[in-house]
Image (cartoon, rainbow, N blue to C red; front, side, top):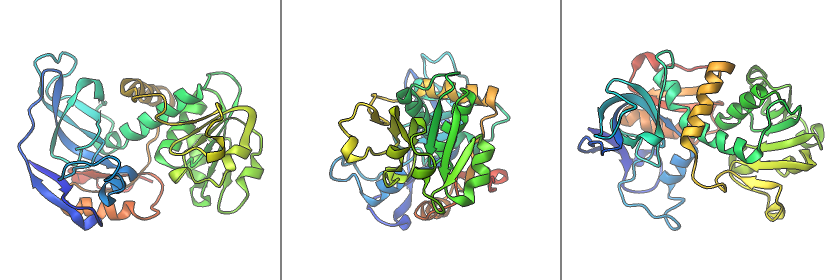
Length: 319
């Protein structure tokens, strides 16, 4: 089989095709023929070597934390999946491959009407969104207000939809070009960081603030929008002055991700709230496709996930 990885850090061109044996599942694992895999900013940081000193990895490095495909073999102890099942998988790395194996605790079925491209865009964002919701302790029917910064991104968009499903008032911030999309997600009001002072617009209105901006870089707006007794959760960074404040949290501080809890939430939102996953662009699951997808990740691309797929019929933009 073919995997897509790199032996050195650098630009998208460092990716190579790597020949490997098809992995066989252990007793509690399934083997998955990958039809599509999602790409994330974390993959770019791996490629650039951002973690080479604090968390060195053996070369070659094959990125990929989320895949969708079909089960092609099952381990001896597996009873809840069968060959032919359509599934998604959340994993630490290695998803840029034609085949993967995965523990059943990190795998969930997807219905036949969910395209593999959409399935591959769900695990990473879904796990992050679920972890944020757990830290925020959102209460259904509480009548409270949440501010979602970066509401057009893959994680922010799921939190917006979940919050509306729970009955909260949703105030959202995004670039003005994404206004219509964020309103479609269910936001009650939208402020545009490129055209107005969003901190002043929503000052002291958030019982909850979720900062899903890139790198947590909101120029401190979230702290202004948070009520005195509110709860703040950031996807990636807490303002230094608030790091000792018990109201402020960062995704990941609550321990290992509850993958099955996240998958259950995604299923519930899809069944009861028509969960919408925005795909920004889809590329072929080839070396050239991976390099092109990585190059697009390096840009300030359109809102939504970037996916590589082997299904030609799914190589379309979903806007």
